[in-house]
Length: 83
Image 1 (cartoon, one colour):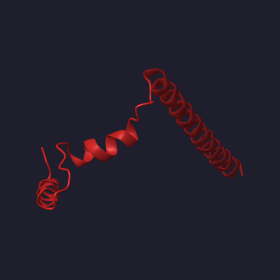
Image 2: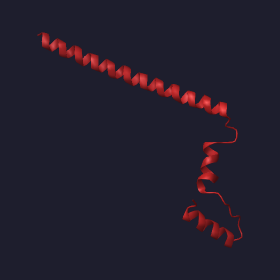
Image 3: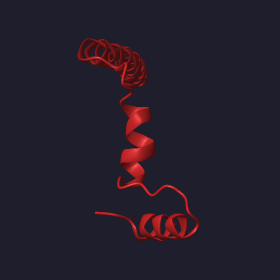
Image 4: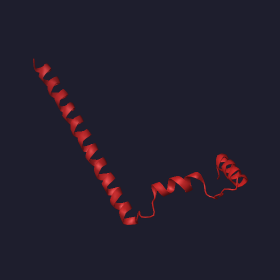
């Protein structure tokens, strides 16, 4: 599905003697940035593994901090009840 702006741009380019393209904005400008020609399947898997590892490390830190806070709060609660 072509955007109305793409249709208008192509019309104005044709009237001005410029090149008209048949692809959408996403196909023409975004896909080459997201999926460059040099991006092989193996490189995609390596990048995905790196993103997964970073995500896992961040979640591990968040869980560790949360666990530490919960344990501290529990210890404080027990200490106040013993008095």
